[in-house]
Image 1 (cartoon, rainbow, N blue to C red):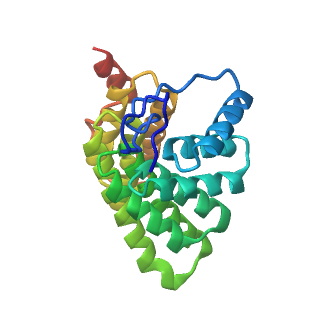
Image 2 (image 1 turned 60 degrees about the horizontal axis):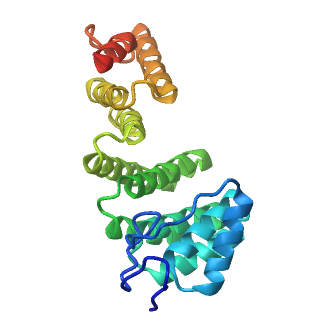
Length: 246
């Protein structure tokens, strides 16, 4: 390990759960991607084992569409700080996008969830990956994958639940968890309660409102078709918005 003089680093504990890695780094703000790429490119050349610079440079490369370059620097960031849950999750995500290597992605997501057990974004990313695996199994139509698909969904449900416990105001995790509850259990009351919590957390988010509206539309159609029973006192979208802003 090393000390980076002049960068606000007073010890070798790199901790990776924030943009400054827990080091008190005063990182500059950039007007464009070019400035960020030039800065972090210079930093990783000067400090090739610094996990924050490696991860941030990987993010810049990823935003520019250089996925293979991003993969390399995310991987180097995981070596520089094996306990950085964000880097581990980002590497898992990009390895899956590039190679569809399920075992490698699962391994890094599991490490990320263990390293960042209190980071709702990392937990939600892992849950989203498990749900994507289930969708892929269904799309492929492989019969022997049915049990694995169910296990993937159960795993997704567990990690979205953990993400919500970690950050009860994470409206995106709340909405996705509500969708998953409905898909897995068709539990209207439970799904509706999580949609309402999501609206209360971010009452002006159009995506959250649209997701709840879609859910109400779907369940109303199910009720009309007699396939599922929806309680008559279901909270409407307008009522949920009104109560959240009261």
